[in-house]
Image (cartoon, rainbow, N blue to C red; front, side):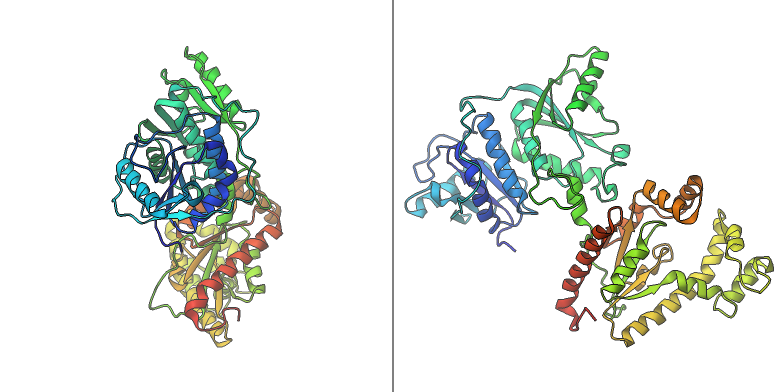
Amino acid sequence: MPPFPSGLLVLTAPLPALPRRAAGLVAAAAGLVAGPLYVHLQPGLRLSGPAGPGPAAPPAGPALLRALAALYEAAAARRGLDLRVLLGPGRRLARPPRVLLAAAAEAPGPPEPVQLGLQRLAAAVYGCPPSLPAMLLGEDTGGGDPEGDPEQDPDATLPEFLDVAVGGTFDRLHGAHRLLLSACCLLARRRLLAGVADGDLLRHKVLPELIEPYELRAAKLREFLEDVKPSLSYDIVPLADPFGPSVTDPDLQCLVVSEETRRGGEAVNRKRLEHGLPELALHEIQLMKDPDHQQNEEEKISSSSLRQRLLGTLLQPPRRDPALPSRPYVIGLTGGTGSGKTSIAKLLGHLGAFVIDADKLGHAVYVPGGPAYEQVVAAFGAEILNEDGTINRKVLGAKVFGNQERLKSLTDIVWPEIARMVREQIREADSQGKAVCVLDAAVLLEAGWQNMVHEVWTAIIPEEEAVRRIVARDGLSEEAARCRLQSQMTNRQRVEWAQVVLCTLWEPDVTRQQVQKAWDLLQQRLRPEAGHDPHL
């Protein structure tokens, strides 16, 4: 873990030099700063000299955009780095820096005057304490883009507009978002209207269950924008449709788009003309390539890819229940019909887990002589019996389907007996020396069995794919398949409980990779405290 929770990096070299140096500078700073890394750009400033004129933001032109792109691309390669390139002073930063940094290559000579200059600038511009530690960074300048752009006019500037609009999901604010928003800040002189997709606009996104809540996305967006350029006014609004206020706000002059969203911008202008409003200037920003994109991920830096990378990782801390034995470590695996939960359980079994199939135990409690048999017959009558005395599960299901009171009567009988059998199986796993036990249970959460496990893992799948699988597997109509799904917990409800989320939407090899990642990370969690071999 880097030693400082936040930092301010001051860069004073000419902007055309930054693309070549960005990766080395960001890598060096990331080794020292764990949280937000602010970047102050002031070409030509002599940190070691006497206090001169106040800070001056670099001109808003293509050279600055190119430098911003290089810095945010470099930050994207350092997963988790929160980089914020400041485009204008004027307020205390949301996460005050705890260390001041400058590039040693930009400040030749003794370090003490440069460190003093860093402290003086940070105190004057951002209200930092004058005694913050100040350090000079070495950098690896190999690689990177060539310096400058021979086809670019060095004196070119960006157009300016009073009010600018932009829209997006803005989930897990990444480098491409930050470049897009920075361009908006450079174009706007007075106000930026940022529409944040919500509601039905999220339904068809990849892994919508893992999208951060609107309130959190809006709060992160505002903090970033107010840090980057505090002189602007920011209107951040939820978008329930693709247009939002961009088609009704008469003060807007520009809409910032990417090559992917240009058609949407053109549709906005058609709507504005219908409403008697002038068209907006469409300013297009290039997409940022993702050098680390994996199978089934987009080539550009995207929130969808970031959400896919969350699959198999720990999303929230495991339960700490002193009453729960630490051995074996129990994973509760759940998921809706058609989610691929059973295939995941088999993969975990192949990796060494002791798998308990709650559905099989459920069948066992109903057999004549089984622990729930007499109580179920007494509660629901002899008409649920076959001629051989066994319980007809379909007849019993028809009696309770759609009747919450009857269903509760049945589960009050059956679930405690299944839970008792599960505990017996967990003890059996322990006697066999198994370190990890997986409870495969569709009703894990509904039955309250999460209290028997250390972690909840859930398998999710889009509803349309689940319907397709149920129809193909069980021969049901689409309507019956949807009805079955609607009677169960939603993916989002399961994800709220889950420590780990898995998705079987893609090829089997992708699922295997997810499960292997989840298993490997589980071993890392167990190793420090378990005192035993977690692979047994």
